Length: 279
Image 1 (cartoon, rainbow, N blue to C red):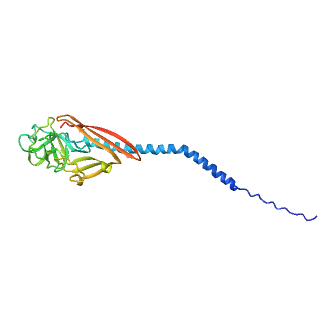
Image 2 (image 1 turned 180 degrees about the vertical axis):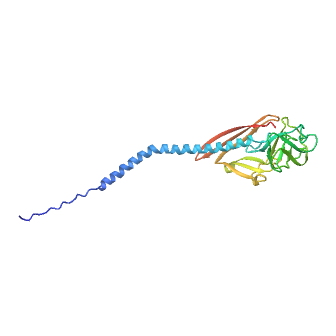
């Protein structure tokens, strides 16, 4: 046999040519651009909706907080100044006082004809702290207003009791000028103010400051500049507060308007709060 020539097979190399790669890139870009045209609108709409919902939630939460506070105000203590300052005195406790002696020798009614140093609480005990003010029949008028610091006798006096008590005591004899038709008393301590701070685009809450004869109308002066301050809402572009109440009326109406703006969009909310003014 003669020598035979052996043939070694060669594997064929395959792959993308430059033209094919360019074509793939171009087609991918076209597809991505087409998808983006259809996706941009829905994505933008989603974020716009989420932003509006967040702004609405912030405004609604702030207004609900204000409503809860105002509804717990001492009757006839809500007052508004300049359409941007609202102040009231929150009630910390309330109850009914004894007016007549019963069968027990220890019964202690409240005397309105002379100075008295204590009275029984009818019903469940109330929680008070030494120095809290007991208010009876607050009408919001001269001689019957928690803001009247000059009237004598006043319709508010500082307690000398602490804890959960069935008897309210005073350091010395006190005389309240007016009886409550419902024999009711309220316990208060400090004031609260809500302020539309439009210069800084905020809604503010100030608390923990002493009751003043004149309503505070400056955030940079006492007592608000040393009070406990909390920001309820930011990006506030419009805010107004009004209050309507007549003398001897059972109810008042507080109206709060609040607008919040972000990225050129604004949400406007209005809250009206019925205020019980039966002392």
